[in-house]
Length: 328
Image (cartoon, rainbow, N blue to C red; front, side, top):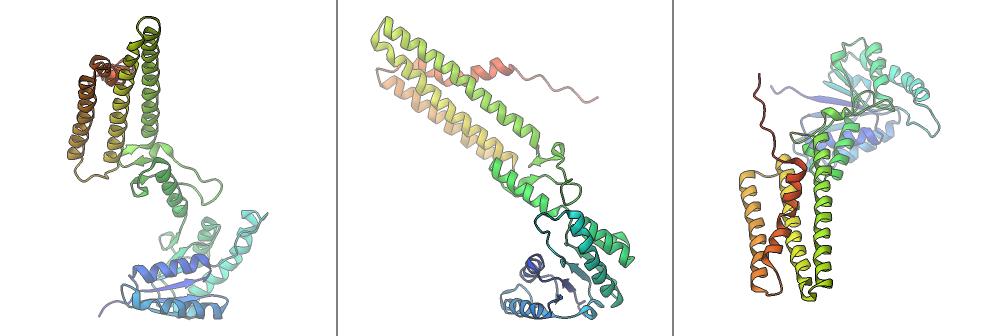
């Protein structure tokens, strides 16, 4: 005989019904019971959800009920409670919701319930503590949602800011679900790379581009000065340097983009991606140098100088990388 999996949801507000909708769509349970102080609302919500059962991945019985239904439930989810009002402190909210949580917990336990409590009522950390103390259940059977929502929001925003998939963002908000929560940035990663190192690297990339632009600008000004005072037709020297530099910038930005995506495991075959990126960069350089040969007004040597400006700046800034020390 297949064991029946039953969940009782106490509270049919926005949070409660969002969870009920998720349970309907993801499956994994056989029975869902909705309980609310407004019984008619619970009945209406149960009817609406039931109409979606034909589209659900598995059959599920959904109904409104009372606390007697908790007796054979595996999990009781509590989302009931008042929302925080403007100007109301979290302490005032805790006093109000603690009374509600106490009454609900006593009603659930008196039914003979011996499963797991999941708490999502605010302030969630205090409400979880109240349920654990009132029920007398071990701590392992009373679970609060904690900072799961905060962490999800953090990962989404980091993904948007860094333009990477939020699934590859590994960062957490710790502490209580409230004003005292914090982010341990030193333990935040994008893929397998430290977030702090990624930010530093992006700053370094920007620094390289800025310095190389200054160098290119100086060379262009010198060549234009030469053209103005000595030979007007040598203004094409500046154009040659500029075209070579632009091709180098395009190749450098492509490389940074590829390295970032490889770090985030976006590519299934990173070796192939690196080879294609290098080949495309060589093709760009070849086209630029070919144009400088075929078009008389361009100078191939100055085009090449423009191409290597970024590489020269990198060598000047960082030189050769020191050899890694052997582990002792």
